Amino acid sequence: MFPFTRLRRLRRHPQLRELIRETTLSPKDLILPLFVRHGKDQKIPIGSMPGHYQLSVNRLAEEIREVRNCGIPGVILFGIPEHKDADGSDARSDSGIVQQAIHEIKSIDDSLLVITDVCYCEFTDHGHCGILVEDHGHVDVDNDATLAILQEQAVSHARAGADMVAPSGMMDGVIEAMRTALDDSGFTQIPIMSYAAKYCSGFYGPFREAAESTPQVGNRATYQMDPANSNEAIREVELDVLEGADILMVKPALSYLDIIHRVKAKHPELPLAAYNVSGEFAMVKAAAANGWIDEQRVTLEILTSIRRAGADMILTYHAKDVAHWLE
Ligand code: PBG
Image 1 (cartoon, rainbow, N blue to C red):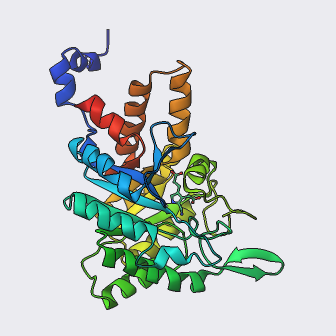
Image 2: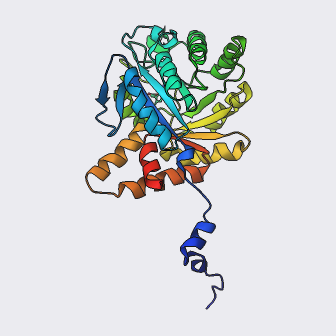
Image 3: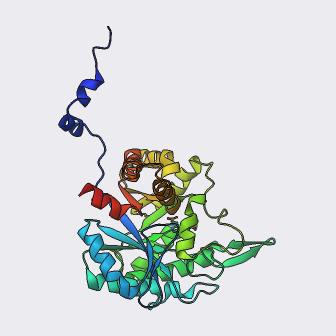
């Protein structure tokens, strides 16, 4: 019979299977998103994201120690301020909720990498990612006015001690604007992780509950990408590369593995992150809670597929679970 090449020979011995394994997954590849809210002694469960909470600043210590013990290198912070207003003033205040959280985390463990999401949707009373304008009867985000307040927000995060900033609002020109503002304030050493190709996705549903950031009117389709487009993602990425992004990101991850693969192939020289978003997490948790899938097996398979597609690092709500499983 013809097949002299029997691939099954290589799969017989478990150690051999490990030796020929092409993709690895470790807690060291993962970044955990955290939601920090105003108030004191708050630990409010997020219904659609089992195991995740909105934590007040004084409840962060326990979480941060656990993250460190798990071997997870970093967290990305999202804030829920006490007051929201039209231009999201808490976001760029040195005493804002995220800034307080950065100070607190750094005082608990200054070796943990602290990344901040730089965007306005959690801070505006209308829930959009920047300042609104009327455009021929439609409300839309004013790109350039928003760039100015994003610069202030990023610099304020850096001043509070953030190690890296991650603009997530998909404003055109944001990387250059942020790089300039950081450099002018003396933060030349702070890298920018760009949400370079971020799609207008239904998978953000649970996050919007968690961050209380659902748009009150309209949607984000003028600034986030159409899920039908792939070449456009390459254009988005090219601009961010030219503007000086240090790390690129594709978001969401699972329905966009082709985009992850394309971006990595185009820019192998740049580190690539993928955001395994809230809806992707919630689907696994819900199916597992019903006994329909094996949570551990499916989660590891999903995260491995994201790494295999080309992501160097993954932002994921599964991070702590994975660390416990892989221990
Ligand atoms: C905000 C932001 C969003 C997410 C990360 N940063 C929400 C959005 O664009 O509506 C979503 C993350 C998730 O769903 O886990 N700019």
